[in-house]
Image (cartoon, rainbow, N blue to C red; front, top):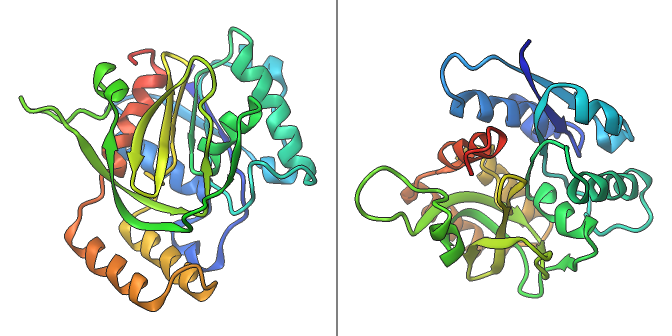
Amino acid sequence: MAAKIAIFNADHLKENLKKWGDFADMAITMLEQSKEPGLDVKYVVFQVHKNEFPSLEELKKGNYVGIYITGSESDSFDTHTEWIINLRKIMYTILTEPDFPPVAGVCFGHQIVPASLNCKVHRNNVGFEGGMVPVELTTEALKYGLFQKSGRVPTNSITIGAVHSDIVYEIPKGYFNILTSPKCEIHGLYKKNRVLTLQGHPEFTTDVVMICAENAHKKKLLKREELEHLKAQASQLGNDGIFASKYIWKLFYGEI
């Protein structure tokens, strides 16, 4: 029987990104590119933004090796939207009780973890962060061997796409901050064998990141000169998204 990955899709298809599909489609593309050859996996998508959730029993006993939470334009700390409230409730149970699959999340999926554990998530006081962003590995990330490329010299930073105005302000008890940038101190969370999150978007190609940056400019989150700087920077930097997602697989299979 194929192992299963539960994908919690937290947003609808974006017209300007339909070439790449919705956020669940992008997640599957990324995971397929980063998984070990020959690994037999079934991806089961739950449209949580439509209030479609699996039962807790299914997650425990349905041969799931991991749960992946996508990004979203919604706020993880929203107290009025039913599906977000319900997502925080189910995530609280998944994160605090035994026998559930490990959890990976990106952007909104990163933020929903601490939000579900009553830690502060809110607007970033220093504004929007976007483009291809070099993020530094923390001492804890190095200690646990996260995001290490082959070679003798330790990997101290990776470059990942970012598109966000909200940030995590508080780290849940028992978790570690693993990545940081000048605009966002808590850029990823880790709990051994249980949780790995990224504020960035490893599933976004550089083209997708820059389309999102253009959209941020249209929404007046970025000035024209800031957008041009991000474009120039993106042309010079790589994209470590697929590399970073290999560590999602390591989490799902108990290697980290």
